[in-house]
Length: 632
Ligand code: ADP
Ligand code: MG
Image 1 (cartoon, rainbow, N blue to C red):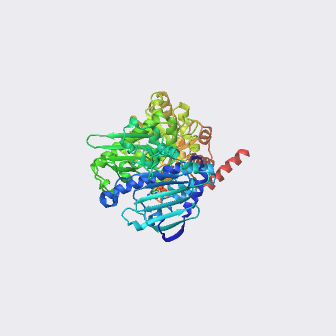
Image 2 (image 1 turned 90 degrees about the horizontal axis):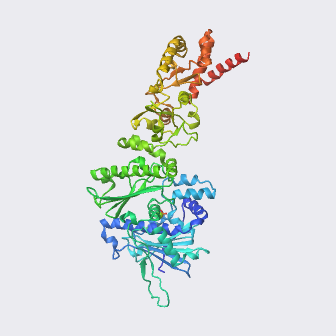
Image 3 (image 1 turned 45 degrees about the vertical axis):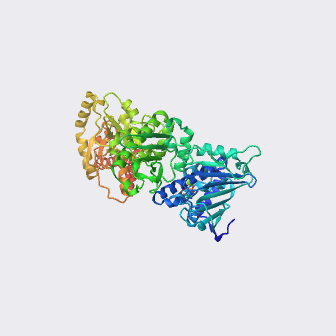
């Protein structure tokens, strides 16, 4: 042991302490993943060194062949993971092994319930990384030296995974990181060659550099020095032919690059040759990461150029509405010195981006077709993000529209289960539009008076209740040649869905009620844009219709929430000529009573549309007066 200098004890960041507690108690059922995490870090360290050595080849010292070595000592109850990657300086060890840098970590941890089962589930969204060493070890020693620093500037980091850790400066001749796990009592079974080989094969076969273990020697002729042999395939997974890669390998590779615990639900692996040459491997995660809606949450692909790792989170290769996808792209056309700034634009990146977008959308289409149950879960996780698509990517809007799922009057479950293609296939004879209604919540829209005529005629209406829906529909004008129509807007025209007789009857009623329309206009005056006879109501006495260009409830709330001026718009008051209350109103000779009954009907229609009343007290007063008259 070399001498240690500048030894100090430091406390873990509060979040780390919490995570350590949680992990040790909730990941007991799958302990072996610690090795995957440590190998994954060692592989990342090799990638980083290769990248930095592009500019500064001296970093490779006399030791250019990168590898990971895993040793063990059953008697001492230790496992050692040794890499000759980038290594860590003392400051880096303190920062990277004492804190969690991921944005949103605090929020994430505060959201944990304390219920172990639930939290064990949640932690998969987070990825535990290095700290998973403490699942099996009661002390972890890390010896590291950053490439380029002198041998005297090694660091020894050590902790029992409780409140604090120690760091000291030590000599370390070899560049890179060696991690020594002192196994807990009961976990000594991991210090076994056969077992470790099995775990490496299972989780880390895809790793692109050799993972070596001491050669097994049976009998007496064991050599004095260990001979190392590679246990994994040691070629980057995406460079291998598709037919040779097993599903489990794809799955484990995903976990490595995405830092995720959960299996992906789909992937698409493609080699492109021709004008541009690149290989891409895209994945759809099995669940939403904890930072999906965080502004600087992880997004983008891992970029390699001719198999050399260049950067994580290269955002330029996919549009934002596909930011939940993970994967790798390895290009032969970009320069090894490519930077984020250079990636901002340029013909190579642009055409890769449009090809990758198409691949991604195809992959989602295939998932929807082949595994509807998985697609449902996908939709729950990422549907909201995909809904940004029609606005962001006009060229692909028809394709994106095909991936959307909606609740519908056709499905009593209220789940977003209906695709536009399903809707179109069920359209009535003579129907040329896709009808929809937007609102705050499913329970609120499902019984909206706007749906009455559609229910009567058996016409399906899509029910859109996500905050983003009304905004999104502004960018979707048609699907499969059928235009969209918001049933709460304008004077409903059912086109060929109304017979000639029905149309004629509407016209006649409208004529017959002209006088009533005029009386109503005098009462409602400036509160409405117009008053007219409705032919969309069967049960309700009246309804408020929006103008074609007016902002709906959702958009108005969005604008208000962002502090913007909401333009004023007035609704059209439509009444149901066949309703007994309207007949009563028509027959009412007393101006006062006509007045208050009209205002009550107007306010009720506003309530049914999910709006709040301007004068709720006035409404209650008028309604009570009418109720009293009833009981008199
Ligand atoms: P992640 O891998 O998601 O960044 P980890 O908890 O696994 O999170 O690792 C934390 C950080 O510690 C890494 O990002 C890296 O900076 C550093 N680190 C861990 N292991 C090594 C290693 N073998 N070599 C160099 N740096 C490492
Ligand atoms: Mg890691």
